[in-house]
Image (cartoon, rainbow, N blue to C red):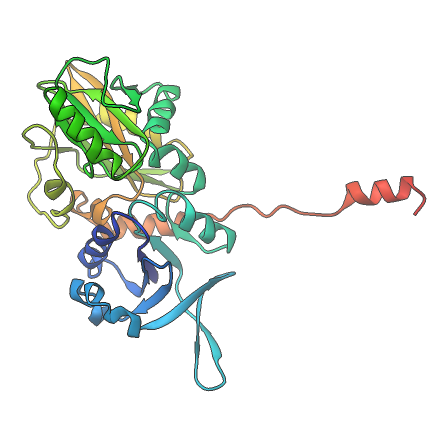
Length: 341
């Protein structure tokens, strides 16, 4: 199975996506690395150049420019501008945040009939926006923490509270406020990233668990259940700068893991087909709550799987394109016949 990996994007999480791509470049049979820069131009990056400095310095602009088109990605070469297509089986969408998780790139891949491991447009809609995530979870009978949308630094909840931009990664722009002054500041910070802000009560003693997985054909595949060690909340560095961590605290209690699997299946449903996702859960007094859905988790949560390559290969083989719709113009022809034309 040959893969093309697409990463970067016009996103606050652009650099995180680069780190993710570098982290898993040797874990899969990646044939092509496709970089989407902040101007939304595609570049074909040589594996030897998959280093953070290559992108930060702008050297990537010396790479071959690509175009996305029906069936794949192509580039032109030589004086006659002969076209060449990249030869891969499945593309992996590893763009975090805007472009990758908001549906833009998934829509293009779907439109051009390119097989991809990615959340589809519908899945992006319910996972990119935390407000819609909570509404979706409730419909799936999964518990969520109470919240409110605020357009000013006021809240009905007692302090402390957690302030979150609704359409960003789980730690970017997120703050805990223990009094009104801290809330005023936290609200301004969140507004720098998004104009949709939510507030949740901060619950002492709540535990956090991560579970990644997918459905490949009829087979459910789950990662280890990670119990997250944190002080107050998982900050940016812990969440995003620890992609290749090997030491994770695993909850081996099978009964507990089965409970989280049940909630995961409700969320994944058939909406997230073709995607490997990670669900971040809370647990308090034996009640499980969905915190958020990571439709494209950092480094694809590879560190939670014993055989990550096998998981991706199974998922890739089960990827399905949209069904074609047969257009026969029967309706228009009937109208014309009725008119005697």
